[in-house]
Structure formats: structure tokens, C-alpha cells
Length: 285
Image (cartoon, rainbow, N blue to C red):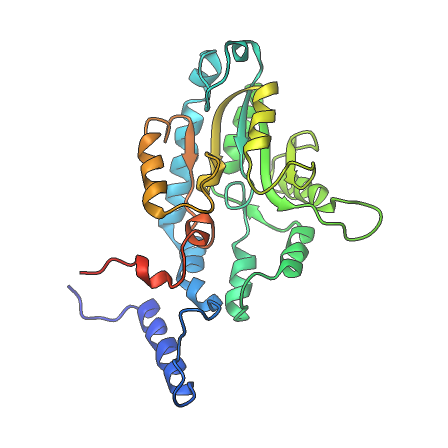
């Protein structure tokens, strides 16, 4: 084992030492209940933006999904979730998430780290959505366009939230998102395909109602996402990591065949289900 201290490790040590040196007498330098500094996300964002490993993983996932499109379309019994027999006569479709599945929002996360932003800034996020400057996740555009060329509908079920900016539109985020999708090369994206959280009364952050609507209209053959909630309901709160792991194993035949998970270490339900202090979930030796 090398004794050389890696730059990321050295930076983490420096941040801890700095926090300890500046703490007032009698006050714990880092409290379990304190807001998590964006610096805690530093390595996650760096990995997302710079690592060959992330790029390879993303391309690998989309290549695998793309390789199965022909078989999935041809087999009328092929569905990503159980559907009734009538689904065999429905046109095929794929459900994809948008953020960190199709569009890469890591510049927004990087800005938070650089500015030491504490917590989620809703206005700052909406500004980023409005700018429509996100680039594509590696492999995503080729996959979507290949599916569309085969006559497979692509439905974008996103938890980007509708929020009026003025009296002219109750959901400008939808138009912003379509503009961004087209900008990265998904030219067929339109308002019938992009389903935003809050666009309809029952379209909450729990995506099940939108999945069920999709299955009424299409034979859904695949799902692609970066969060467990993109595949199953009731997995984003009031659940333990062990229970989620059991659900992963319970559906193991679907991963890499009908369900395709992309990596996202920067945020997600994997983190929000963890109760404070999060250190309790670490397993050392």
C-alpha cells in the first residue's frame, strides 16, 4: 500500500483541521445536526465531472439498454412492470428520468461546492433550469435517438417542479427542459413526452401515478434512471437501507434487462432516507 497521501484525502484532512482550529472553546467543531457543507460533496462532484470511470459506466449502461431495444420491441410480452394482456397491442415506450439520467447538472452542484452553499437553494436551481445549459449524460442522446428511430416512444418523467415565474406560465420549467433536451441533440422531445412534477394535481415526487398513466397508453419496455424511485414506489422515505437492498435483490432479474440504473453519488433518495447522524451507517473494521 502506498504511503502517498492523495490530493482529495489531503484536502479533506485540511478542511477538518481548519474547522477544528476555528471552533470556539467548548463547542464541537462539526456537529451531527449541523447543515452539511457543500464541501462534503466535493469528491462526488469531482468524480462525476472528471472520472473516466463515470463516463465508462454511463456509456456501458446505455449501450446495454440499446442492444436490447430490438428484442424488447419485438416481444409483445416484454414489459418493464407487470401490465395486462391488452398491453401487447399498445405501442412500445421507454420511461427515462431527466436529471443525471439524460441531462448532466453537475455544473450547478459544482457551483454550490465552490460557493460553499449550505443546503439546497431552490431559486438558484430554477435559474439553472431556465438557462437550459446542461450537457447530456454520456450515451444518453445516442440511446434516445436510436429508440425514437425504431418507433419507440420516449417519455421523460421528471421531478423538476412546476413553479410559476410570472402570470404568463404556470410551468415554464417544462419549456426550459424541452429546450435543453433539444439543445443536446434530442430534437423530437416535445410537450407530450415531458411530464413534470406538479404539472397535474397527482404528479408528486412519487412517480408511480405517472408510470401508471404511461402504462395505460403504452407497453413500457424499459426504464432508465439514477434513483431507486425511478423504478419502484415507496422507496424514498420511511425505509431503511437494508430494506432497499432487499428490494434490489428481489428484482435482480430486471437490472440490466428492463431497468437501467445510472450512478449518482451527489444526491438522491439514497441520502435522504438516512437519519442523523449519518455516521451511524458507516461500517468500519
